[in-house]
Length: 584
Image (cartoon, rainbow, N blue to C red; front, top):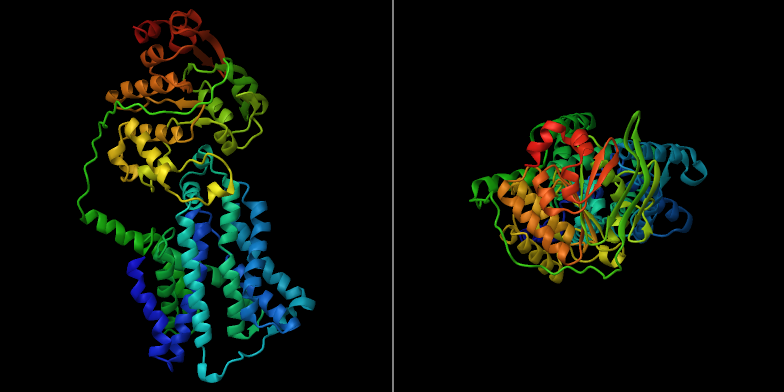
């Protein structure tokens, strides 16, 4: 943020240096207003990836709150600004609690509907809002000699506050969790991120300063009407500002707001009025999407990275031999996972058919079978990525099939994926510290990369042989290295049971032995594993017992020696001729 100190200081001093330049002050204060909205919008739509196309509704809510309170009580709109922010947050809380419990594009459509609904309500609730006649506020109380300087500093301070708030969020576990949701919401839930809570809180955080700005904007205009307060063009402007500067960055929405506001003013003055401004916004949106999809700041950063020296990533991986301590609570022998009569269908296809599977504590259990036999679907049911149609799932003596995925993760259930699902925009170290051990607010608001957590993450990266890649982008690693990082990420959760989905799939053969050594070392310390794998020699050398799946249910179970010669297994899984070759 050091580079921003000089231009921000210049903005603070501008009314002192040019005290009588009212026009340019007005242009700048409107840029501040747009920056407040774009920075706030960026919290839910940039960090979390849930695009709101009706965010100016919260500016209107703040405006009408200040206007109504001012008319009925005589309270100055500046003093009513916090109340405008609170009303905006309450509106976001109600809407978010309903909409953000699910994924999908419904959120985009509903935010537009909210904006239009607010316009209808403001028009028809004439006893409160004075309908289409609007609300006229009192003139500013200060002398005309000050012109718009108080408004200038009001919006400038709000912009500073919004930027600081956004910066603080990004440096917490909360901010990291939002980025994880944007990158891969299902994976974020699997590593303990309460995605529903995070999205709702982010939506509320994205509205407070917008509501406050609305109160000041109402005072600045001294007149409110439904069409002006809840216009769709305001929301388009917010989105455009964030996209131009760089959605998901701290300073991108600020820079984009200044660019869009100045361009808008030039179009209005020199281009023939407001209609040319609408045309400008439409053309600009198209151009940004086509030629600058990441925004200005990310494009500049990418060009700088291309021009700099990039460290070569060793695709074979750095093999480590260090031991890492894991903390698994002592428990009596017995089953740690019990799948009882679980079924899951997709239309006419039954993927899991009344399955019973038991995993004993302290074992390395293999789950093998042909493609399409239901193994990964069973993993999804156990971890909560899918909801079972019937049956029960018990983990460590507790029924979990009705619990959300993040709660299962907090109980000690970890999982890697068949195709690695790291958060590619984060560094390797950020990926490993991303998992959350619990759902406490204190944990959510803690620093994103804290001292002891960072030390533990580096220790785990050293254990899997990738400590020197801690500050590299996760997407720059080889596929096998990403598998190892994902395992280190799961270990950060201190799991009791780890579900490994094809850990050797697509991996350089030189890393397969390392993966087996890691699993054996962790198992000796009490970590239980359930492994889905097609590498039969690896399964026979690593796992005991072996469960064979076919058509959604187990058809055989036992030690590797018994399974390799089971005629039913050879017929259903490998075929009689292939079986002898595969097990040779």
